[in-house]
Length: 265
Image (cartoon, rainbow, N blue to C red):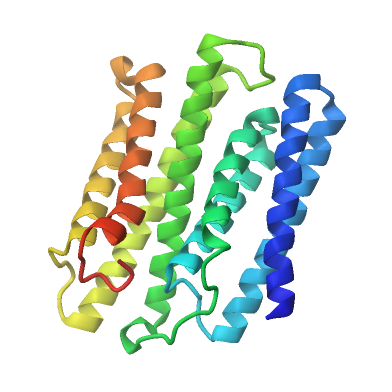
């Protein structure tokens, strides 16, 4: 437990350092600062991955059954998503916005009890793990799309920051939406099959399942909207921001504001 607590606080501290380095890079435009910022992100992500692995090994299952663990896993998935885009496309100081969102998730998570509760029998299946992993990867990619959309709008107002071009930001936004939609589709497929095995039906009308279906329909529409001229560019960016609001409500709003029969509500 001590090692895990050390890793948790360590990765938070290193993510904070990465944010400071990204701010310095945005102000000074020194390439070396960008390399150092990326290096700190990779170090923090490594510590976070090790912490997740230790928690998984100790619990005997993927520990995403309380608010701390879902926030932590969401943060991990967002960091993994950012690392993929950064290593592939070199996003420059675009990483600042994503890392700030990541720190917010960790800041909310860390004060909470990290102890994983006992796993209820209906969740003790590989389908549960697949459903959760694909769901949070989808959430993370939709969050990445939100970040890229905000940066797209900022880039249209000022060129003072070392950001990718607007055309590149739009392309990456579309890629994040498409990949997120694919992962979220897999999440719904495994979740439906899991529900059938556990309860005998593929879909229930509980509020979380309903909103998850609405999210799927929304982002399915976005995958088509990129081919419609009137929804390209600024319109697509605003659609991405609105989509993130739907994701945030489904992930946190339903559990905090409403009652749901979903096991992880």
